Length: 635
Image 1 (cartoon, rainbow, N blue to C red):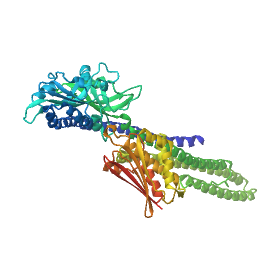
Image 2: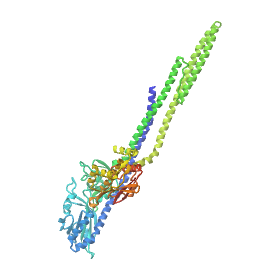
Image 3: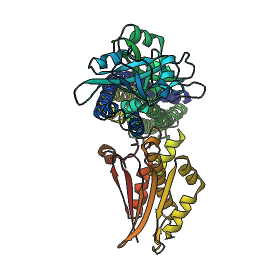
Image 4: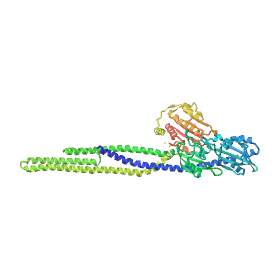
């Protein structure tokens, strides 16, 4: 009987899990292919956008240079070079220019802001200067040799590890200086040195995306925001030979998988041309392959969990159903053994509600009929004994007939029972097989209908031990432990925390606190309110970490607490870059984040804690000025 039970379980297990493996494998291959195709489309689109941003940087440089013409031409005409030098120190810093060179009408350098040693040099052979002296405006990428970098005073700034001799990739604009009489009196040259991650180009190319970008001088990476490692620096590394051949030699765009700093990227590259339309470098963008396949990996985990659950349910259901069938068959077998011993009083009790129960009832009816037949035969036998003397010969014949009749009845009953058992069991197993076939058919037919849901999960849902902890925290919020809380003491304790002080120090954040001493205490869970404030303060500091030191913008964190009628209002403000409307709309959505790392659950958890206190939390933000989170708690 054990063999029958295990055969049933194994059959159910195979028929329920094998289709899952097959469908899941096909689905994973399809999702992987779909993720790659979608990413290729995105990266081609973003490469065009990045190239347009690069072109806009050149155009912007041309307009910046042209805007200086009138003032520079006036000062040069009046021979006020010292005034020009002093006046344009701040202008060059504000415009993030790396060099600012003025020549006279014969091409001799009369002012070089980045390297005064360059002054007096005959620059008339320079192609840009020649064009400007003819009245043309020249804007393009260019390469400076080690000698030219020394003249410009940019040698150290252009130095890239492992690259020798030193070369510099620049964007430069040269315009003619025209006085009030519309005469060309010289030229003005300005520009950016792109070596060593100039933010003017990189930040504009990748702003608001998860893409990274690189600029190459020939096939050497000289400007990049690709994350690197100390053992595998990004700057100075070479482009993949296949990509380099396609872009530099053939002038084509290239799309493919490359490895940078031991990490795989799906990347696209396009050539950079100089003023003579010769290829001198490459512009490239990429996205880590782990981001591309993140959604597929999440679905794979869900699929594996579904298989494990299916196996467990198959085992549980199979063992339970198998045990019921085996117990019923054992009872039938014991009934047949009793019949074989001639025990016609034996009855089989089965309450399975199926054909096996019908078979047991039929067995019981047969045994009852045999019992009645036996009693009738016994009566006949007693009558035969009474007439034995008179009909001895008939008595012997009747006794023989009686024995034969009992044997016939028993054999007939056993034959009928064997036929019924065979028939009924075949019906049971046929129904089970039919049910399994239907289940398999439904699984194949219904699975494609879930494709829209699968696509929604690819976009939205951001997911290691950190993910689980955050999700459990969100799904099973802690109960509030209410007590009287002094908000002034709580905030003072939070800001004095060692980790907070270290965070402020690392990001050069100045903390301003406005908490009146006369504030009333509130009834709240102090630990959870502290957790909310810690999340808001940390987010504020991280929002200011991208502030450029050259912009002159201070990193100020302001915490203000006051009483508003029956409410206590807490404001946490920063001077970061602010948030656009599309980010504000999704700010409290689970798993939404604009950071490169993180799950996007902090603000969602904060909102749930404040709601549990019957309070509210909202955010006010303006791009370029910063953000303010406002918490209101009932007094």
